[in-house]
Length: 108
View 1: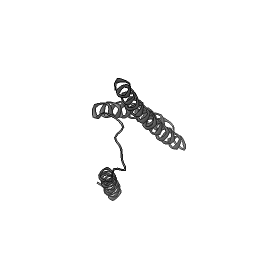
View 2: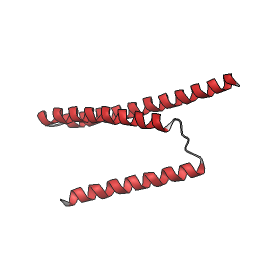
View 3: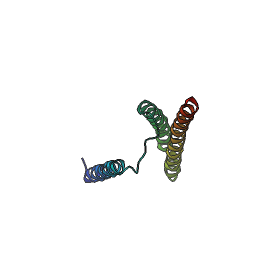
View 4: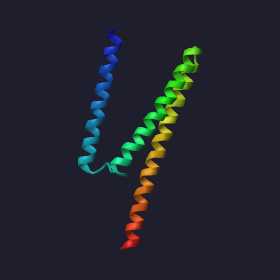
């Protein structure tokens, strides 16, 4: 493997490690809240991953036939799609949690 691949792998591992450390610290301090159920979280994560993987396959096939600046446009679309999916999934989880708390309040 080339040196560039090893450098990229090292950067990715360092980024993931620091992110995990930040999340653990935030959970200990109570700054991070859980908005959903573990099964719903996992299901939404799987659906989002499949949608993004399909979009990535489409973008790479498009970029393979068209060289030049089109790849930057494709990657920009993927970033926006990922942000949109994250926003939608968080909205779904928060709405389900709000509905559960309203039902509990009405039952009391």
